[in-house]
Amino acid sequence: MAPSSGADLPLVIALLGPTASGKTALAIELAEALDLAVLSVDSRQMYRHMDVGTAKPTPEQRARVRHELLDLSDPDQPLTLQEFTALAGAAIAAEHRRRGVALLVGGSGLYLKALLAGLQPPAVPPQTALRAQFAALGQPVCHRLLQQNDPRAAGRIAPADAVRTIRALEVLYATGRPLSAQQSQCPPPWRVLELGLDPADLPQRIERRTAALYEGGLVEETAQLIDRFGADCPLLATIGYGEATRLLRGELARDTAIALTERRTRQYAKRQRTWFRRQHQPLWLTDGATAGALEADVLQQAMGAAMGGLG
Image (cartoon, rainbow, N blue to C red; front, side, top):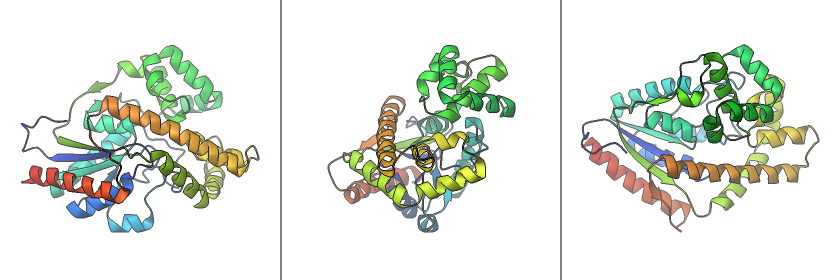
């Protein structure tokens, strides 16, 4: 967190935690209480037409408070980390001018780290030809290629994460230098209050979330995405969409697809927990209380910290 000596600096509240931990509901409460926008830091919610499978805030939730950094690009036009941080930096600056406080909410660890620690990725524009070649090779081959040439980057990127794998290879081949060797840090001029959600009932939450995705139209949304952007779109290999694609092809039964999505989500949540505990220093708000009690507790503490900073 930022040193306490910079009391006159604007404040960033970062609400982080693994998937299905309750961030969206709490963020809306917090944003309503403090008259803030919710600035989403989610590596999939930034794409248009990916609503159900990413558990994007509903139209009703978005009507309650303003949400920013959603629907920034189409799925077949992946944003680089540099592009996202530029957009997010502008949104944060706008909130600081308006309220002196900005609220970041999300579970995408690298994106949060880039914003909060000032991680500066290399300024390499998208390489369309390279991306097409890597996509044709397939994700398993691409990740092995990354392991051979940039093991540090490969160690931070999940084997199934095609978007980040291709980006790391893109930087490597475009510049001749590993991505991991080109990232630097320049901490931004903010005070940061990190709040972490990690409820004890996360496995049950994931189970309910997964069932809700399929009941809410994940398979139908996946079919529409395939029709519009093609089955080879890398984002269609991500959690939920990958299983729904296989269901549509007749490779999986619905129950099996749901079970695989739930398992992949639990694995992802485990990686998120590890990342947040190693890379961040949040005030972890975990107890055995109900979700409502936990949210009320977090809201009280966050409001106190924010109002103290504004005073």
